Each structure stands twice: as structure tokens, then as C-alpha cells.
Image: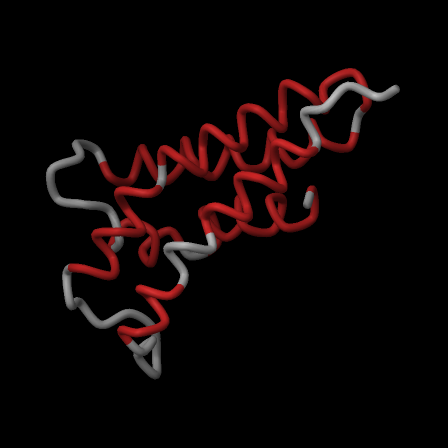
Length: 114
């Protein structure tokens, strides 16, 4: 899971235009929000690697996954083409329910070691 978030967070800085494009228009400062969410993913991924910070990082990542749901919803509902070739619309809708297992996965890391 740490690798997943480290890569995902880094992509916010490598290809920020893609992430800015999926930001709902009602959210202010989309470039700043992309950078903040990318940094949060990187910090959360790093936090998962350390036992001392794993619980807080896991809870933070679960909350982040909830916070980005509006952008993922807007991406599917806006009918804007993404990617080259464009990502099929059904894929954009199908990935929304996948947020739930990701949130659950993050919360598994929040359990205290026995």
C-alpha cells in the first residue's frame, strides 16, 4: 500500500495537468489542491513504512480517499475525455466503488499491533 501511495503521490507532481483537469470546477485553486493531495499521498505512504506513524498515516490516507471522492465522481460524471486514448466512461464509473476497498485496506493498517 505504501508503494501505491508513493507512486500515486509522485504522479501529482510529474503530470499535474492530468490531476488539475479532474478537479471539480467548484473547488478553488485546483493546482494547489493537486499538490497538497499529492504531498499527502507521499507522506501517507512514507508514514505506512514506519511502525510509529503507521496508524496515523493509515487513518489520514483513508480520510484522503474519502476527500477525493468528489473529484473522482466529477471525472466520471463530467463526460470529459481523459487519457490518450481516452479512458472509457464505464471504467471511470467502475472505479468509483473501488474507493471502498481502498479505504478498507487503509483502515486495516490503522489497527494496533497485538
